[in-house]
Length: 155
Image 1 (tube, helix red, strand yellow):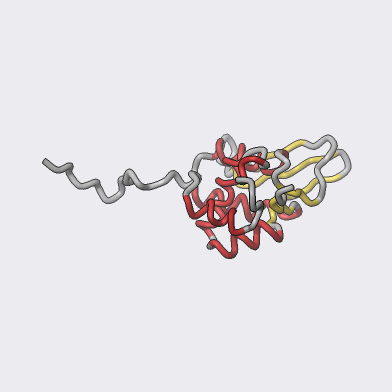
Image 2 (image 1 turned 120 degrees about the horizontal axis):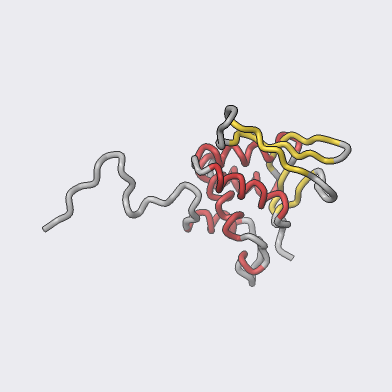
């Protein structure tokens, strides 16, 4: 006896959550020639978070553009947009954005050392759906378009 066919809108067993890592995302990271002798997880502080960001960039753009964005740098706004295009889990997205700024896996320009506060911009009042982030520091305020992230190379 065979199982009934899945309904058209139901995800299949092979379908990944939009922010899960698949083998192609690993190939994008490996294509960056991060390390010849060490798997990326041995030097990344949050390899799952980095892989989720890579996966989002790869799915929204493509492998080649994702590689360029990671090696040359991309604005935080671009990364947020890619993540928002793939998932509606805003709690997870806010954690990924915070991780990208403070984990040390990305070179953040301008440098955010010193006291800073993250202010999330929400879709509408009383909503938990964030759409952007602002970094507040004692002497300046940075929008997500002013912040560039570049994947740190292996030591």
